Each structure stands twice: as structure tokens, then as C-alpha cells.
Length: 349
Ligand SMILES: [Zn+2]
Ligand SMILES: [Zn+2]
Image (cartoon, rainbow, N blue to C red; front, side):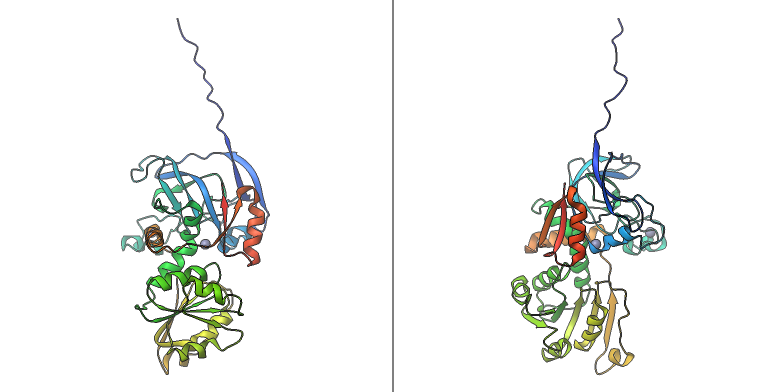
């Protein structure tokens, strides 16, 4: 006697997704089928995703070749939900995250030199493929970072872009313990930069516009607060013998230009806030009376992200966040764009 077998599998449950359907389009909340991970890919059940200013790239179509509809989001924290073929390094149930660095080919000249952050075929999460503004996402296995147990999803998410960008740039900027390090901007990046700088053992000067952030900057670990509206910040840094590093986080090229004279001997302006206008500097300013360097820095590899998360665990550094449910993504994005968030906006699923 043959048993009757039910041929049809139950339809997969749809998931909620916040997508952009065209450059400059609104954020739309829709439902989609849960995606399947392919070769060397991992499916993540997203628990939290930071809303970063760089999501404007996807929202407004600022990079060439973005395919729409596209789901933004590159500060993703969640758990491994399914692994595709030939993935042995990640297991179901493991806590993981994805940042701006969304994958590398492992075969280009830069990758063969071990410089994955400069991969010629680097993928960007939420730009090259759908990111974390959704309940489930699929990412290349090499793009994942493990999240330590002591960090919550909402704390880990912003550390995967804002966190690694500030941590990784600062640890490569050349300052030694006790050196004067200035953090320009007390915002989404700066409030983390001040905390790292303090934990790295630097003498920390926070530079903000107006007096209102002074108390917070000191609470975060600044030893000195410089109000750039009330005083000439470059002169104030020189009175403290000049900065070894200025971590420039606020996307104001004018404000960055005005700080260059605040650098001490062999000082470095580390640029991570991305404004569209030119930074203005004369060659003389870079040569005499002391030599100075201006450098840019972009995020880091997933290994750098893991270093960031481990150091946060070790030192107690945490982002300050405002959370919004996925259903209110458009409102969360507007809040981030307003510049009034204190300080990182994070979606929860
Ligand atoms: Zn970002
Ligand atoms: Zn490569």
C-alpha cells in the first residue's frame, strides 16, 4: 500500500524588507521571500542594523552601477541562520556582523599581498548586494566578523562601521601613549573616537562647535574641550604643544583646513569624515615650521572589525544609540540625516 506523500512544501514565510527602488527614491517597506545562501555565502537573521550616513550612497545612487531595488545597511549584527556550500568557518547560531567591507575576491594583486581592504573587486554591503535593512540577508562568508557574547546586537552594529573606522584609523595614526590626540567633532564618529583615544592612553582634546558638548566630551574621556566657535582651535592645540594626530570626523572640509596649523612635529590629520569640498592647505603648512601629513582612512577588514569588537569588550567603549524598529526605517533614516541623533541610529528586528 503506497502512502500518500504531500508533494508541495509549505510556502516559505515572507520577510520584511526596507528597500530603495530607484536612485533618490523613498524607503519602502515591503515583503519578500527569505533568500537562500549560495556558494561560499551565509544567511544572517538580522537582529540590528545601524543607519550610517554612508547609506546615502544607496539611497541617492551616488556610486555607479548600483542595481535597484537595493536594501541599504552596512552595520549589521545578527546570527548565522543558514550556510551555503563550501562554508566551514561559520556555524548556524553563531553571532556575526557585516560592515562596509562586504567581501573581497582573494585573487587580485592587492589581496595576494594580504591587503584585503584595497581589493580591486571589493564588495560593499548594502551597495553591491542587499544589506541589513531587512529581517534576513545573505553575505559572502569572508565578509563576516564574529561578535563577542558580552556585546549586545544594538551596541555591536554601529561598531562595525563607525566603530571600526575610528578605532582602526586611530590605531594606525602614529600617536604613542601620552601624545596629544585631537578628535574633531563630537558626533556619530567623534563620540567613539574620543573614547578609543582615551583608552589608547592619549592626552585627548575634543573639538566641538559651541559649549554644549563640553560636559559630554569630558564624560567620554576628553581631557580638554576646545570650542571652535569661541576660540581658534589650531592655536589652542599649539598652546598644548601641537597635536600628534587630529582625527577629523565631522564632514566639514573648512573645519579640517582650519585645524592643520594645530598639528605638532610630524603630526597627522587623519581624515575619516567625508565632505564633498576641498581641504585647503598650502605646501608651506606641510613643510615648515614642522612637517605634517594629511591622510584618509576607510573602515577596515572583517578582522579589523573583530579587533574593534574585542577592544570594546576589553575597554568598555560603547556607542550611544537611538533605536527604531524596522517598520520605522524611513523615520530612522531622516533622524540620522538630520544630524540631531545622539549619536548612532540603529534599526531593530
Ligand atoms: Zn558606515
Ligand atoms: Zn582582491
